[in-house]
Length: 135
Image (cartoon, rainbow, N blue to C red; front, side, top):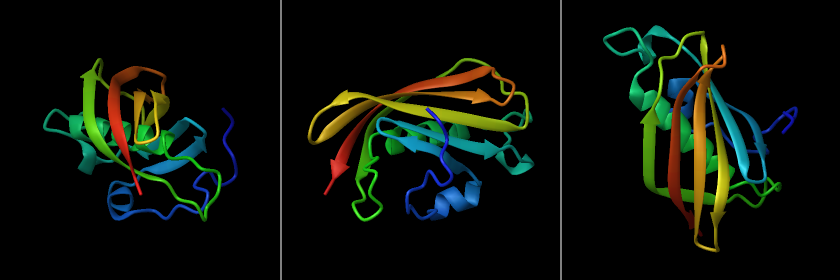
């Protein structure tokens, strides 16, 4: 996958995305990448990124991965039906990078998998999810 100048394809930044500060950095059929600079407000009591941050990034990347249309006037939306997150390691570095891939599905639902790495390349978490298309 190669990043484009504006991978959002007309997508607006939504309130939770703005609050947390993550950015959609690549978006193509069956694939999406979101990135989040780490800040103190995102850390847990141990000074590590909170597990809910990992889950949110994975849910977002996998959600985008199944909704790419290539046409800003034809937006596709989906709802998460199931999300399973596996926490594998601790993040170092200054940024979390989540990638999601649509792995299958049909007209109403799709399946996806995702991973979160830090900007040093360490694998921090993986996930699988089931999503339902809206509209």
